[in-house]
Length: 449
Image (tube, rainbow, N blue to C red):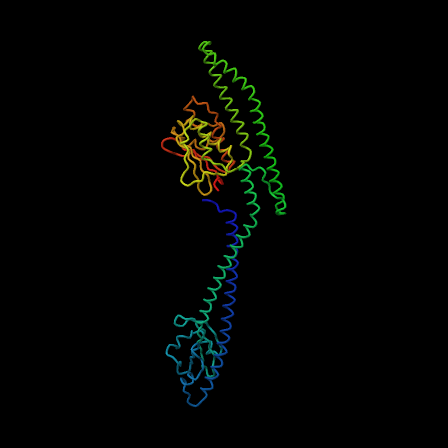
């Protein structure tokens, strides 16, 4: 399982933190609101119950009181229901309220002359029961519905949940923005590293962009300077050695050529040895030329507008190959933004590779997609085993097909040069399956405009 990135983790942390904080605040606010509303409703209900109890007491002081009429004279509205306990029984204005609605403990407290308040559920609905003692061991009870209060609690709870979710979302947005802003310097470092990897060694970071990252920028620039000096030293060494080898190689080549021309005057063993020397000198010369090309690949690509179709046909003519090998796919443009020398060398190396190990090239295609130029060279050889498809682009590596063709004189640098030229354009080189043979593909980002 892939681990989430730093931005995702920080954003999630902000969101979780905001959610927890808002949830705690919501719970505290809900509890405070609930207590406040219930306490206020209880005080209101107690005041109303005492007032109604006084009215009932006055009504009962008459000679022959009509208890039901007294209860009906109370202005209780629809939220309060009165209940009166007299020596001869219980009285109420409606039949749905009776003695069973009053807990025994609360009845005992009122009978002892103590007022009592208790929250109960009546017919599944929350209610507040207030008991007021009357003279003569009588008791007046009043049920106040808490349904509206409960509905208010539900609305408040939903509102607080919505607020918590919005706060969590705001926390996530803040975390995303904060990480985006804080990671911007690291993005600049990554972009600079990619440009350097593509061959643009002039790339540097501005130490004045962020005071907190001055040390990072300075260290990065110092590292790049050392890397450039190291690469330049290696490139210059390879180039110097290659150039120094050219003179003795030319002398050897001339001597080998003389020996070859006089093979008919030599015995068989001497002629064979002279042929081997000439072949190895030629191979050595090709190796030196490839090393010089390899040293040049360390330099950045110098792009220009190039008619790649015409350039590909020119390279084929130089290799004595038919121009008909070159085709342009669909509506792909012929003009690419590439380094002319590198593109020609890439195609030449792919054609030579196909000729040595693939039975000769059978197609050269030029295409493109989404701004990426694509060069493909097909051959009719034995193909490249899956285990060799990456290593054959390394220096001095020859695939199994090359070893099977022991008579070839490859140096193991041709495909390495192809990969280097592609990397200088910010692109890639790869080998694909085809039946029969192999297909070498080079992708060059930014080649199509």
